[in-house]
Image 1: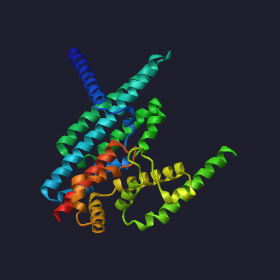
Image 2: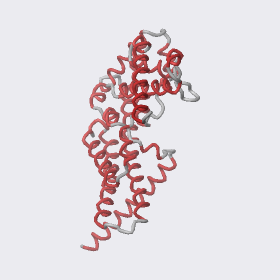
Image 3: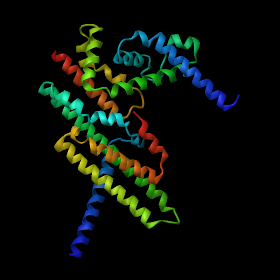
Image 4: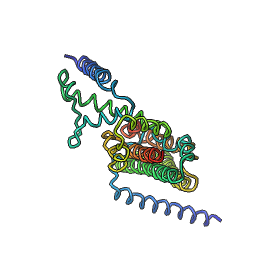
Length: 168
Length: 142
């Protein structure tokens, strides 16, 4: 039983690392520069996931509604990618910083790593939910993800990225 | 002069330029979209610098640029969070005040793409473009 748990955990970690590596390549190849870590203002994100707009679009002719649904889904995925990229960038900077640190706190590092993995996993789940349920039903998850990333930013004390949340 | 006085002076001047821009120009332009179109037309497409002949008589070019850029960003930030239904209404009222063929031209040339201020996030720019496309489609069906 213990072996199954051990191998299961190792496989999960390996899978996460693979996903992370793949995403890293995907983002670096997509032309998204570090500047793009400036996350959009919460009001813009709320508008992308707005139920009000969704209800209005449902009253429009089918081709227009399809265009709306396709665009909003693409925007939701863009936002998830940005959140994930912000997490990856924060973690990369953190790893670079602590590599030179003489005093590492094991539990603090473990907590940071757990927060990071939670963000990555939530992003994957969120992306799946956007495709299957559509962005308008996922408003609760937006605040959850935003809070998680902000908490990680605060923990790692990167004021430049924290300020980036105010951008339109 | 102390740094405080210098910063205070700049803030007062920025407010003066903004007030003059609002009162002298933007007050006569109806609707948020028309104001955005006007402000983006003040911006040089190559340099990204804003120019306003009337304002540069009284104020320096860099100050006028800053004021217009800030005003553009604020108006855009207001419009981008407007509900889609209101967006359609905004475009409808914009096209009632322009030439009859402007709706067709907008659909084909997509001039609204240059209305986006510099430094806008990818998501906000995408939302703006999508709302424009949808609103134009709705108006085209009416």
